[in-house]
Image (cartoon, rainbow, N blue to C red; front, side):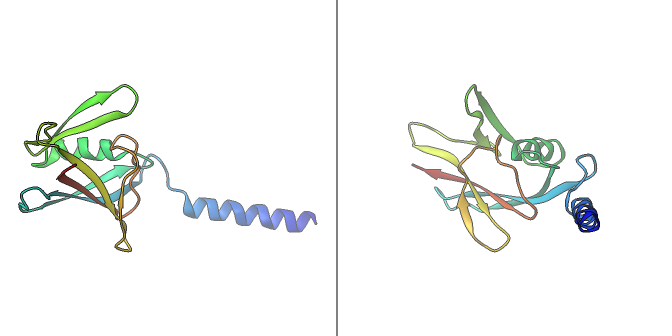
Length: 135
């Protein structure tokens, strides 16, 4: 029984070593696609990354510093950052427009995010869709 327990513990340690990434060296590659459903304008695609267990917000801030991608946001005390504009196009309450956050998973499934950019933790090869749309 002691040998079985030891082998099980060794197997668990090996699996943990293989599957868990170091928080200091790994990152998650993602794509950010900016689309406009209101005017059907051209989309723009950006390559970005989130750090280990990092939020989409951090990836967007990093991308903003290194590419021609820009966004503005306001900080809500309960819900975190709220995207106001992307690449100079701002949502407008009177026009009923806003930036919608959708995720295309590697299998092609598209989901509406149930959290904002400050809470969404991208997974490997997510395609983040920032879609300008109406409500």
